[in-house]
Length: 254
Image 1 (cartoon, rainbow, N blue to C red):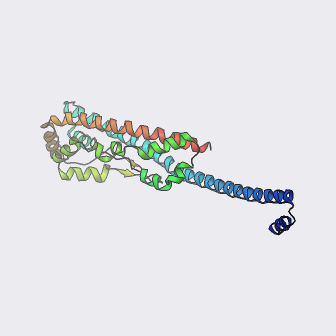
Image 2 (image 1 turned 90 degrees about the horizontal axis):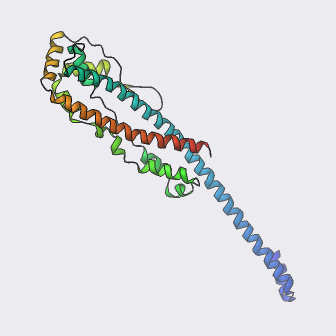
Image 3 (image 1 turned 120 degrees about the vertical axis):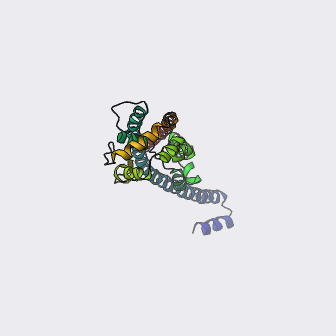
């Protein structure tokens, strides 16, 4: 309709009206494009918020898992203390307790690497749509984090390997069955290590295993190295925990 009016005014050489009509057409097209762009941007922002909420759920569970790792190693550390006392000849540490403690002190877990999952949730375009610079920065740090430093391999120490060569398979199997890792129910499937381990190991078998461990005093030094590796893993896991909680809190404030 408007184009027909413009044609009519052109034939009549009514230039002022032509200019006004053209301005109306151009303005209408511009406003339409702006509205479409605004709607698309709104949809992209809503999509980004949805993705962030999904990541937030993952991060909350992840932080809970990291807390569980700290508790796990606190228990393993208690066993390490008793094993160390056993190598020092502490009379309060009996043969059976010494053997169990030496084994349990070698128990380790790894922190799962979820960076690939988060990177898949957020494509490059979605990442650019995150307006909060701190959220974008922390998310990029978590995705780019060196997960080798918190992996199971980072604590696969010589102590863990050697102590399991000394203790008989029969005792190791009994410890795993009765006092090995337990998986908690829930979304994180966190592992826990029983704080106490009561076995019915024959006295002669426990004495033989304890004597074999004491015949290798170098394992006490390897235990110290193992605990240092665990401390390093926990330090890096703590950094991940801080990033995860900070990111979760910032997403909450959106």
